[in-house]
Length: 152
Image (cartoon, rainbow, N blue to C red; front, side, top):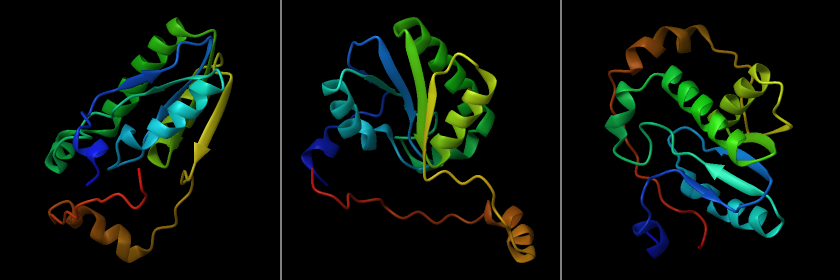
């Protein structure tokens, strides 16, 4: 574990103080820590970035059990309102599940300037076996510790 990650506290952050900003969401089982480099880069280019920490993320894996996807959508709506107060132009974006949340916001709000959606599944074909096993899998507890695959 790098020193940067060891000292990281799971909370939302905003980088930059510009008139244009991106509300950018991390993916499922990830954290907004993955967005720090993007935030620094955009700040240098004159674009702010808001990276919320989704409810249930950045703590213990068990915390995700009590969270419903609607909680993340409601949180995203609140974050969008905050960003619209801070910036003249608001873009939304995200990685994987975060991209789905960004697409959800964009289809609801016509004052969003643009969308960045990275690695976002739109359609999934599930086999019959997968559909049958899905209800059972919620009782299976398998946790794999994440590590950084890149150097900070």
